[in-house]
Image (cartoon, rainbow, N blue to C red):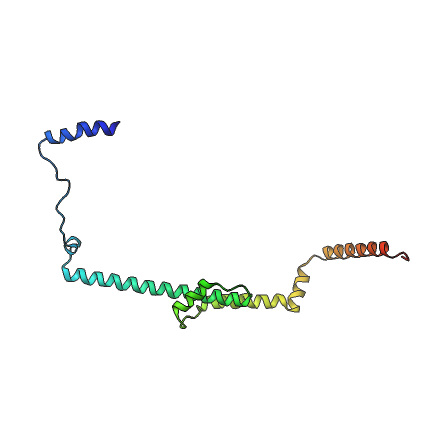
Length: 157
């Protein structure tokens, strides 16, 4: 409602006040003049922008390819199904893509931790971390369960 009143009363009052304000100032049609540069400076600036964008895009694609390489390595390691998206990314990037050193270190650390857990020493450490009372309870429960099943099946016992 306020908009309607303002549009009806406001526009005629502007005309009565005398000086009409220009809604738009004249803008130069040349973008170089609008930026406050000469034509050559503006063209140089535009070239720099394009080059920087191309460099950023190339770096971004390289990073994506590195990540895809790492995912492929992890899929191979854990025998997971391959991803066509990663394969396509590697083909687009070419053969010059290597996995970043930081990511390789992380994967190697995970691999050594898994090897330690899988080794006999790792199993001994897990046994040390377990509660002996809990182990005894499980063993006695299993023994009594087996004894009960044996007595049911065997008439001699």
